[in-house]
Image (tube, rainbow, N blue to C red; front, side, top):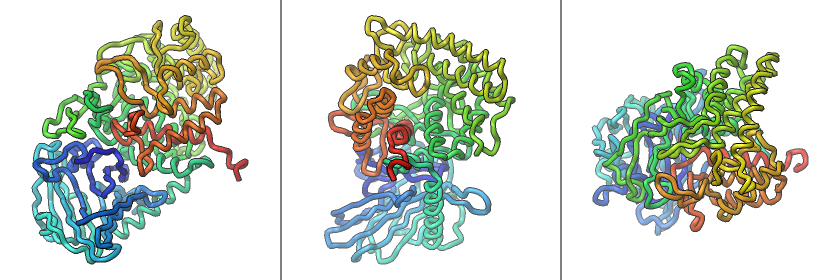
Length: 596
């Protein structure tokens, strides 16, 4: 039974998978990250003791394990040792490199298994599922491969290992290296081992070159590199979509019904991902995402924009339950789809305008923004003006009611403020003045309606009294400076009510499913940035170091953390959290010039 989020991610922006500490592939969807989870033991402990839904390479009499990423890559190496001194190494990756003038990123997972010491004895347990765990995928045995079919696509496992040993889950002595390629149902002409090694070298070189081009801060470089690679792996390059996480239905806390499917593209979260990668100089991801949102806006009326879409731009994400899967640690339900697509979340207009803003300033981009693109953005700005200060579900997607959320209003203000800047940059003085006037009116309204005289604090809902961690984002969005007295008193109030050690809750009140039990990981990074904006830089560095220490053994974070135990909960890896690692490190790092 897989009951931990101490997982490592592999991928190539076409597919992605999660590996546990002993090298089992416990989560992987085909033919893309929102597809049928053919390896789903993360959400299914197995039927009658059988490892259904896993791809495990077991070392008999295992006593030790060690796992790490190959430096500056998305390649994972797991070394297992036995009680006789024998050892085997598993190398896992998804091929990604340039070939024939374009990026080669097939629907493929590669597993290299090599003896390191002695005569290790291993067992390969290949037990894929289909239709969200409803049935075992039965193999059709070929000459050097096993063919399978998921609910979405046929695939095959090509190998130079004994097919009989795999099908029968029979142990054997690993006296020479073997390779296993999970990929399209197509003939692999080359020998699996030599092909795998060639793709491993090419993939390693690709990631090393990609990392070499990043504009890294001086401090915390390894944490930033791992976060950046993770964000890259959380994109679907075919369309440019950015996934909120790779999993579905990892509960936010034990014993709750907060089990959601996060394998989709939230416009708000994606903006922060793109912003973080841009600050590191990884602009191609932004270009792909702008192509994605252009297609969405082109097929939608501005008033119909949803907060979340499928990774191909699908608008309908009907929610249903996968009854065959028992859930993470047996905590059902397992959900497919997300009803949040039906909600009104007014912050989406600001998220889209801000995501597109760099088009008009970044000289590195192949196709810079022009007046025609600005006109299209103005449609979103018009809608932001119309909906600012009207009720919505808010950034936390409350399902039971709507309110006038301060964060949504601030994001609408941000849309107008950024449009004013872009118009000025393009030399459109009259339109710049018009958008500045809209922004001024909205800011005056927001700073009045979101202020509580009784509490002497900004509040999460107009006219209310409750705090919300998104208030910490206001200096970064630009509505208030970090040293504004109104923000400083709000920061103090949040420290008193939402902070729990170095972690923060998003809010403390009950919602549709009761009060939140665990801290929302991203909020800790918001707090770090707020401390820095308020001038408390040394304190911000200390908190940041402690939050970094809460990452799992390979440097990744999930959506929630139990403040008492430090255990991670919620969908994994959450892109919003990895964004926090990057933005906080950039803000707090010493400059290269002064540090060298």
